[in-house]
Image 1 (tube, rainbow, N blue to C red):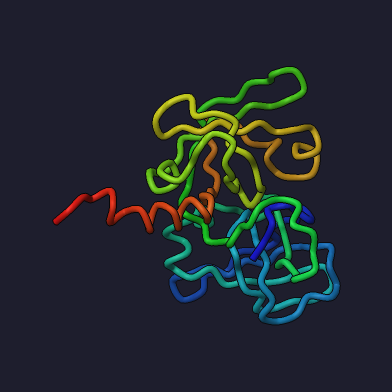
Image 2: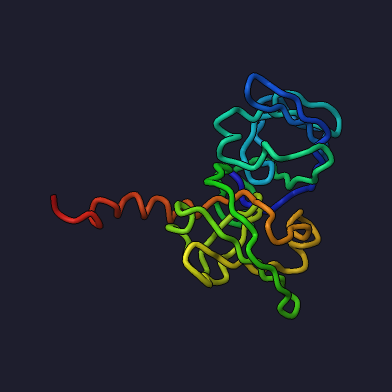
Length: 200
C-alpha cells in the first residue's frame, strides 16, 4: 500500500530482457533496501529482486507490461519512486495500491495562475470511478480530480511543489502516463453493479 506522495525521483539505468518480461535497474537515494521489498515505480507496485547502495532491480512480468507503459521506457528516463507505507506513517496523499489500471494520454496542458492544469484521456475503467474532487494516481502521484471536461477526460491541477518534486513537470501533450483509479470508487462500483443491472 502507498500514499501517492513521491519520495524520490530515480533514473532508469538499465533494461534487461527477462523471459518475455523486462528487468529494470533504477538508481535510488536509499541504501537500506531489502530483497522482496515493494516499491512503486511511476505508480506500479514492483518487487525488489536485486539491490545495492544507491540502486535496485525489479522484474516487470509480461502481464504488467501489457497494462503499463514500461515497454516504451528507455535508459535515462526519470521515474517517480515511493516505498511501501508503514503502519505508523502519515497518510499524506490517498490510499494507492500500486495496481495500475491502465495508461492515459495527456490531452491538454495549460497554466492557470500558479497551477498547471493537465487534461488526461483515461481508460473507461478509470473514468467509471472518477468524480470531481475524487482521487486518482498519475504515474504514482496522488492527485485530486479537478474537473471532468468531457466524457473519458479528467483534469488535474498541479501545484508548484508537485511540479518540482515529481516527473510530471516534464509531461507534454501526447505523453502516456500510468493511472490508478480511486480504490473506494472501484468497490462501490462493484457492489452497486447487481442493483444497476435491475431484476432478472
